[in-house]
Amino acid sequence: MACNSRRKPEWLKIKLPKGQLSVDVLNIVREHHLHTICTSGMCPNQGECWGCGTATFMICGDVCTRGCKFCNVKTGKPAPLDPLEPYNIANSVKLLKLKHAVITSVDRDDLDDLGAAHWVKVIEAVKKENPEVTMEVLIPDFQGRKELIGRVIAARPEVISHNLETVRRLTNAIRSRATYDMSLEVVRQVSESGVVSKSGIMLGLGETRAEILQTMDDLRSVGCRVMTIGQYLQPTASNVEVKEYVTPEVFDEYRRIGLEKGFTHVESGPLVRSSYHAEKHVR
Image (cartoon, rainbow, N blue to C red; front, side, top):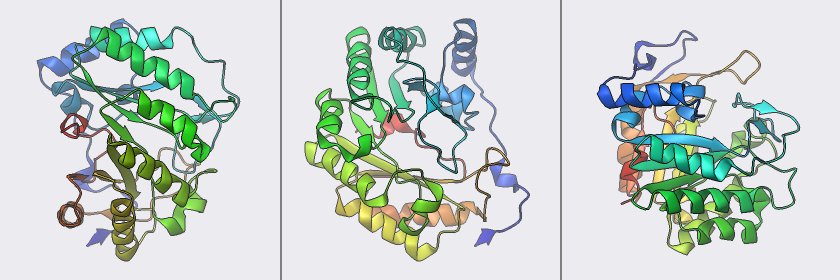
C-alpha cells in the first residue's frame, strides 16, 4: 500500500529532539558553531541519534561538484580543502562526547585524488583523538578508482557506506555522473576488504516493488551487510518531485524481506536516513 497524495501523511511528522543528552548536544553544536548534517540537513532523527551518542559530520566543504536531482547541497566550484578540518572534526567528536561518529562528504571531482587523502587525514585524526569512538564513513564513489577507495579502507573505519540512492532504472535521472554498477563495485571492494559494508536507497521516486527487491539482491551479490531504506522528501521546488509516500507497513515488509535475504541489519522506515541507528551497525 502506498499513499500518492502530495500532502505529507501523518507518519512523516518530524520528531523533535528530546532528552537531556539531546539538549546538551544541541547546545554544544550551537555554542561552538559545529557543522553537523543532523542540524543543517534538518534530519528528523537527530534527537534519537544524539540520545544514542551519535552525530554525522560533512567534510570537504559544503559545495559539491555534482548536481544530483534529489539533493539540496550546493553545486559549483568548491573552495580549497581546509587543512584544519581533520583536527576540527576530531575535536568536535571529543567535545560532543560521542560514542559513534558518522562522516560524509560532498563529491570533489575537482581534486586530483578526489579528496581521498583528506578523508584519510580526517579518519586518522578522529581515531587519534578519540580512540574509544567507533566510526562510519559514507563515501562518494571516487569515480570508481579502486586505489582511492583502498586508501579509505586502509584507514580502517568500522563501517564504510556508499549509497545506491535508487534503483537501476532511475539512476541516470536521479544521480549526477554516478552509475549503478560503479556504486555496486564500490560496495563490493569494501565487502571484500572485511570492513562492514553498507548502502541505502530512497523510496517514492517511481520505483516498483520488483525493482526494490532486485536492488536488494544486487547489494547482497556484492556482499553488502547493512541496508537502509527511507522515504524521499523533496527538499526544494527545483528538486525531483515525490511520486508517492510509502506507508510504514510497506517499509516494515521490506525490512523483513531484507533480513530474509541475508542482510545483518536493515533499517527501513519513512524517516530512516543513512546514519539512522548507525551505532548498531558496527557489530
